Structures are given as C-alpha cells and as structure tokens.
Length: 293
Ligand SMILES: C[S@@+](CC[C@H](N)C(=O)[O-])C[C@H]1O[C@@H](n2cnc3c(N)ncnc32)[C@H](O)[C@@H]1O
Image (cartoon, rainbow, N blue to C red; front, side):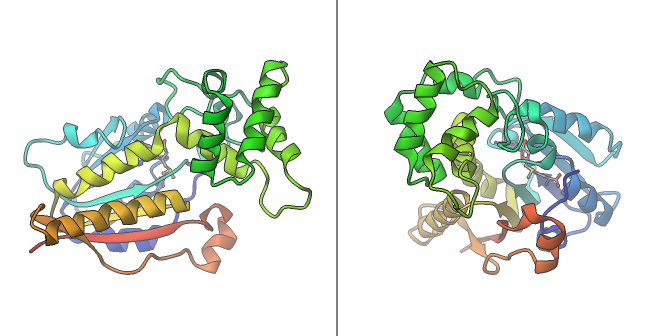
C-alpha cells in the first residue's frame, strides 16, 4: 500500500482556504487527496490528475462530489481547467507510487522479475525494451549519466547492449545484473538504482514534463496561492529551484508580473516517518507562494 509522504507538512502548507480550489497533480493512490478532502469544506473543490490510468480508476472509488479526476500528464492538466479558474493550491508528489513500483508487470523495480516496460502510462507506446533496441551505446551512456548521475554509465551501457544483442537481456532482473556486474563489490547503494532511475526518467520524458508543469503552474494560482512539491532526487530538486528562481528574476526585471517565493527552506521527513516508511527517506518538501510586485 502507498503511504503518502510528508502528509501533514504538505497539507498544512497547501491549505490557505478551507473552501478553496485545489489541484493534486499526482493523484497516485489518492493518499494526499483523501486527507486533503477530509480537511476541506463541502464547498471546496479538488481537481486531480495522473498519467497512469490505474490511478484514475482508483479516484472513481472516492465518490466525492468535490473531486474531478483526469487521466493526463500534469503538464497538460491546466488546459482542462475552466476559463479563469484560479487555484488556491497545487500539490505535486513526483516519482512513482508503491502500487507501480511493487507491481512486477510494470517493470519499474530491480527487486522483481518483470518485463522491460517502465511506462508510467500503459497507453503510451514506447516500452523500455524498445528504447534499448533503438538507442546507440553513446546515447544510452549519456542517458544513464545525465539522469542517473551514474559514473559507470559507459560500462553499463556497453554491457546492456552487448547482452541484449546476445538475447541475454529480457527482464528487469537481467537489466539489474548488467549494473551489478559493472560495479565493484560492496557498494552501499544497490548498483542498479541509478540505472533504473535514469532509464525511467528518459523513457517517460519526466524532466520535460516537470519543466512545463513548473512553468505553467504559477499562471493558474491566485495571489497568495501555494505550490507545494515533493521531490525525490537531485535532478527534480534542481529543476524546481532553477525554474522558480528564473521566474523570480524575470519578475524583478519586469518580464513577468508575478513570481513564486520560497516560504521556508525544504523540509525533510522526520526520523519517525522514515523508520515507518523507508521510501520517504529521500523526500524533500518545497513550499512556494505566488506574489506580485
Ligand atoms: C509518488 S506518486 C503520488 C502518490 C500520491 N501523492 C498518494 O498519496 O497516493 C506519483 C504519481 O505521479 C504520477 N505521475 C508521474 N509523472 C506524471 C506526469 N508527468 N503526469 C501525471 N502524473 C504523473 C505517477 O503515475 C504516480 O501515480
């Protein structure tokens, strides 16, 4: 079961009005949304979206008149809002939910034997197997280096393509083995962690969607509205900081009429939370508020 990360902290930051309009851009299994609805009044509204159709099927079971659910990319959700609909708060909890990670058929985890799939939405056509089959060794190494910050990227890319050509790379366990065999024994992190992260980010164009989302989100917030995001790795964290700082500069130079200001420094889960939910350990909560000059 998915346990929502930094739940109280994120909702306290998000809710500025109990009967306001909110967006949960990464519904997942609805952990944050459920708790948010519990704290909101009957007149409030909550729009939710997820790229994964199985998440949106779960949203239907909420049976709450305040909820509208869309199966789409979060970079496209703003096109679905009614004209002039400004939001009081937007929440985004990036990455994967446990239901995706723990389902071997989705191919996200090196812990299970599964197909080389890794699509966030099974409506999309390109699978990981197809990405591997159509990418050169140099490009594969660049993906693993850029999105996994993996220093052994060249060696791992070479091993992946060699084994694939010989018919020895068919499953997630085979893929994990490629990374394991390139690593010296005794490394602290599992050797496949960075490679799996990199391939998932590339296959799903995660950084492109994240950038678009961050550029659009402030346009749909009211003055004082909050953007609350939970990141899980340094690429997401850096993207959030860079895009929002850039907007701030644009406002100072008169190129934008508004910007997002950081409300507090990023928050981390408590020791207690990471003990109960080890997947929370790399989470960071970022809280921004819209303001105009
Ligand atoms: C960490 S989970 C969210 C968990 C949720 N907060 C909860 O408590 O159940 C992240 C979710 O974001 C979705 N997601 C990832 N990238 C997306 C994108 N570009 N557009 C829409 N949804 C996305 C994933 O499918 C996944 O369900």
